[in-house]
Length: 394
Ligand code: NIG
Ligand code: FE
Image 1 (spheres, rainbow, N blue to C red):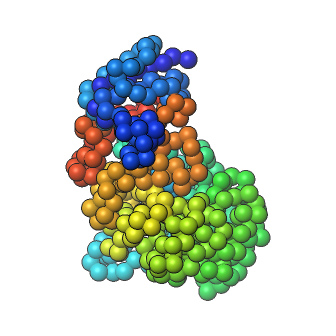
Image 2 (image 1 turned 45 degrees about the horizontal axis):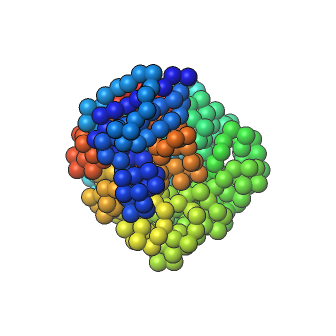
Image 3 (image 1 turned 135 degrees about the horizontal axis):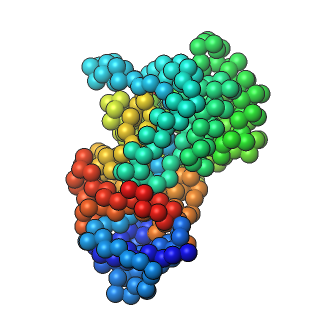
């Protein structure tokens, strides 16, 4: 295996406090200034101060840029056809976002071929890669029949291991007014058929989608078939999503906009990650989640871009970092951690979201002297190159 030495790194974010210049938890990002990294095949072999760098087979000078672990996107819906730009336009002129819009994408997704879905998905993945995202969780959820969900999972699995069966997104038209019957079908047929193709089970627990009892039934069926739960909760209204997620030991509960004090406490006391998706709040003109309160209470917060055609048609983690800092009152350090190590925590992964020996060699290089520029320079394409599994892919 050949080794590569990356030098000329003005600021290296390791997310490994013990490796940082501060050498302690006071700097959770584990920042090393004037750093170097050695890649060995698919893994990181060494990180440290440039002055101490070992020899390698080849070298590349990054000319004073910043290096971060690749972003870990823990919430996306990239398997779909069509777009909903008209719905977005109407919303910007005052129409309210409702879960029902999902049905338009369900119709188009069912009608599309697997190759069309894959092509759209690959374009979105390449878009996110160019913005520094190297791990992506991908949900089904625009099929809402056993056959169509299965197909979405198979397409998703062509590009990622982080595949989620979003079995209950919104009851499809053939089950109109019969949501309980839809849930029964999901439990009896969809979950058993689809579980071998997924790692996670998800549900949209929300008024107009699935209530607490229905959500519990779907998630419990997933657990029975070896899937780990994650939940869309408390996005549009206060509701039972957070408590249900914590009760079932979900890896993450996502959106978390409308939270009670009890919800915040429950998240702070549990291992369930609170994932904020401010791109969705931005594009629905809804309130932002109380990220500051969650962090101050001690909850683990992840940040995702939530790429989907309805609420958040962005793949840009830097854009979401900028909103998280400006509008969710996260510090730039907290937002960068949430988009890297936080996403990894939400996916229960230890090999990504960090740069230390043994980690996967996924990293992005910024044309900026430090990571603060991600929020400080909103909308500017700062990611100048990206390594995935040790390979320069952008
Ligand atoms: O994460 N909230 C539910 N699911 C998506 C939106 C789906 C859609 O509108 O198509 C989300 O925001
Ligand atoms: Fe979502």
